[in-house]
Amino acid sequence: MFQADKYELYVKKIKNGTVIDHISAGYALDVLKILNITGKESNTVGVVMNVQSKNIEKKDMVKIEGRELKPEEVDKIALISPNATINIIREYGVIDKKKVNLPKDIKGIVECGNPSCISNSKEPVRSIFHVQIVEPIQLRCHYCNRTMERKDILKQF
Ligand code: CTP
Ligand code: ZN
Image 1 (cartoon, rainbow, N blue to C red):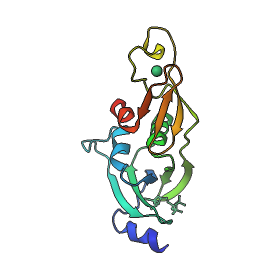
Image 2 (tube, rainbow, N blue to C red):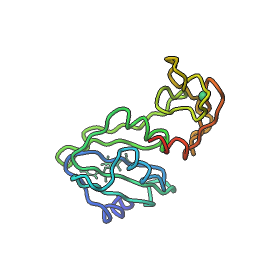
Image 3 (cartoon, protein in one colour):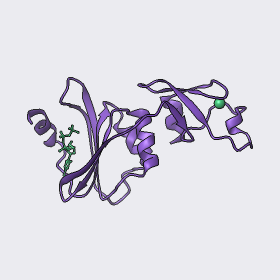
């Protein structure tokens, strides 16, 4: 495809690993942070920012050789980029493609920013947030109503 070819010029196809595609433009570095990729690891990582997508919107992309993502990592990516797709690559082919899933209620991934919240007490209460705004993400604590925004959430990742 014409537009796909345009960004293939920036970062070539990978052999085995994961391509995180359709990341909201400007959020690739947040995805790297979520995955704890610092550049000091040995695997090859390709990062593409602000390239034309098939639709009008621009997107970011992260390609990682030799790594598959854990479900917890995919759930975190959903919080900052709800339209991202996770492509598993084997021998240059896409063998699996999944859109990330942002549930209505976020359980146990984010800690409440309110120190007095029951979810931060010694009680075994798991955090629960309701998604108020999808993008940029805004969550509201089920217990104390504290609002958590993208920057608050990223500090924890
Ligand atoms: N890709 C890659 N290396 C491979 C295979 C695919 O980097 N060996 C990248 C492609 O460049 C693309 C993404 O992985 O950005 C998904 O590949 P593919 O499903 O072939 O592309 P599309 O059909 O355009 O994907 P979608 O429909 O999800 O936009
Ligand atoms: Zn709370």
